[in-house]
Amino acid sequence: MRKVSVALNPEAVIGETDPRLFGAFVEHLGRCVYGGIYEPGHATADAHGFRHDVLELVRELAPTIMRYPGGNFVSGYNWEDGVGPAEKRPRRLDLAWMSTEPNTFGTNEFIDWCRLANIEPMLAVNLGTRGGDAARNLLEYCNHPGGTAWSDLRRAHGWEQAHDVKFWCLGNEMDGPWQMEMKTAEEYGRIAIEAAKMMKWIDPRIELAACGSSGRNMPTFGAWEDTVLQHTFSHVEYISLHTYVNNYADDSAALLASPDLMDGFIEEVVAIADSVAARAHSSKRIMLSFDEWNVWYRTRRNADVRVKPGWPVAPEILEEIYNMQDALAFGGMCISLLNHADRVKTACLAQLVNVIAPIMTETGGPAWRQTIFHPFAQMSNYGRGRVLRAEIDSPTYAANYYDPRGKADLYFPLPAVPYLKMAAVEDPASGAITIFALNRHLEEPMPLDVALRGFGVPVLIEALELRHADLKAVNTKDQPDNVSPAPLAGVTLATDRVQATLAPASWNMIRISR
Ligand code: AHR
Image (cartoon, rainbow, N blue to C red; front, top):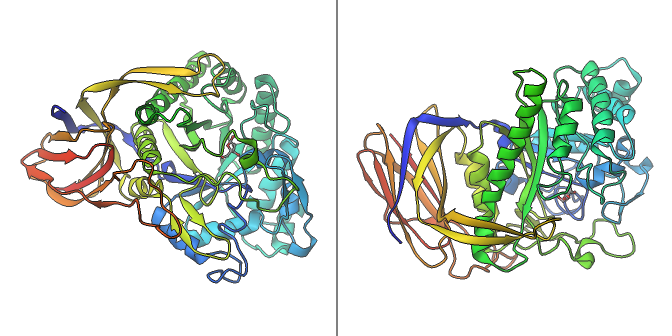
């Protein structure tokens, strides 16, 4: 491949990353809660039943905010079922995932777990089977200090201090036919604004995310965002986006190109949100909450992996095993998020443990890192700061991405995909720069030349690559480090310049200081 050139100017900044850009998601789904973060009786569990082997990996992954309790689950959830003495909590059928929900883990346990993990909690309210009344009661239970029935109930349950949850999602994927009590944009917009109004009357410091369409390929996309924001504009700070990229077509080149569609999706939602603002003659800017994103296909459409018969508790569903090329596409999605740090202020990797997750566990056994763990951990630990606008001169390739969820075209032509996808983030305190770079060429190494205007002679802090000769290689309980980062050799440094050769089909992180 010919040389790929990148120009970075520390003065050309896309935006500063919000700490919430590095979030994840815990849903009552399969073994995410039960057998995932919570497993009383496990050898590493504490008195609360929290698995500490999982907690250690969560700390290494370093998510900053955690969405809970769903997802599709929240649209049928009675939050009251999950608080109070555990032995009195009801078992319920969960129609989202055809499971039995024992309710032994609920809101208070989730808050305790977040505090232990040093993660900000994000709660979603049920605007499917319930509405504004249940939402305002949950907020009062969580955030009101005391002296009212709901807040005193929390105190009676053992949580004297208010939980002080700042970020709330107004429902989940409300345009999806799979959702309990799906809604039209008008219906949802009305319910969302009324819930938002009451919630902000109780606690004006909270921030709210309205549901965007559940995917860019939904027939509702576009008009949904416009209508919902026209209703809710005055009372919400965020609109949500969800994307799962796939490799149903077993087409590696298209899989690695697919994060570019995420860039387009973000830019379209920004345009719609700003058009609503313009029509409202407002300078307010609605920010984006990308509160579900990942690679997901093996366990997505196939009924017997989505649902197990007999209404089991915590069934082994959606336990996607990620391979090397999934991690590359996933890394591309990380880059898309970073490069839109000006408007995407919150994002949640869906999900955290076992269910389409970076961390896998065996119930009663060990926990280990999936391939996608590594790009996320690197982004979260080293991708915070000022995202620089990179001018990239890279050869391109053409791909045709297949997405069976689309109603019109099942194929999305991508005629000019740059082989290099990258983001560069400057730490404002030290001036150090972290480069995340994906070589999407499947056979050829990439000679990369990065010009850093006015940087001086860089000092290499660390250079790592993630690659494997077999794009389908995975990590397992017995081979947990089969796909894991290794030093990237041969990085050369000169005044205002970094050069490296990126292996074919590789994810790379290069950290330099002044
Ligand atoms: O993350 C899995 C599911 O995907 C969520 O419950 C839902 O919101 C989405 O469709």
